[in-house]
Image (cartoon, rainbow, N blue to C red; front, side, top):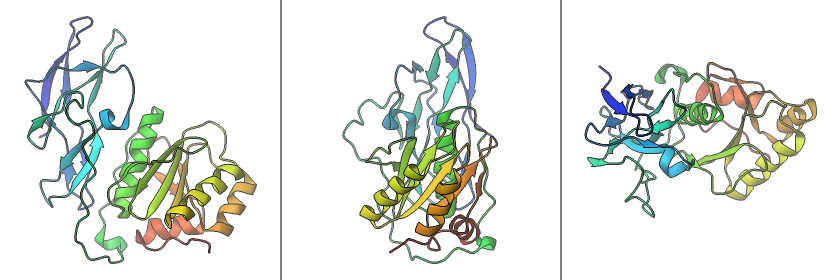
Length: 251
């Protein structure tokens, strides 16, 4: 059963009930952050990757990954960041972790191609905000088999960049279709990293952008409002079918 705690808004003193959301691990087991019953919720004044995500270990397979930190929206207009327990320590606001490496350490695993039968179904996250689109994309990258998903070091010209071992991805929550320049900039970034490149757009792609992506081997996905990425070209189809290791990169 999902864990639920009482959360009091420090601005208006209203009390809310917060239930920790569960997300699918790569092994298929549901993973939810542990809520800190003794910790105080804090108003969200600004957004950062370190504060918005928390490191959680899967109880089934032991994998450590970064998951969205629980939040509660108060009727007074304040968004509250709920305190959680990260590796047995309180992580209400991210204090005490500055400068620490929260990216999971590389795991000594054997690389193999994942077949559709070996992977659980992807569990989507409903998209209401740009942050939801980033969350859905991060979960999908893990489902494809990419490890250590994090905010990309290099910011793309538009949207939000994500990166993991062997992949660079761009999430575009704009209401306009992604352009030819958007696709080419992502591909150039991926080439400097010798990585696969995946593009996730809410509004689709311009015709010339799709044609260029096909020529360069950029996997294109469209995010619907249920949070489920839909492949729109051959490179994306290959990844969605077989997982990592099947994306094509242009020479």
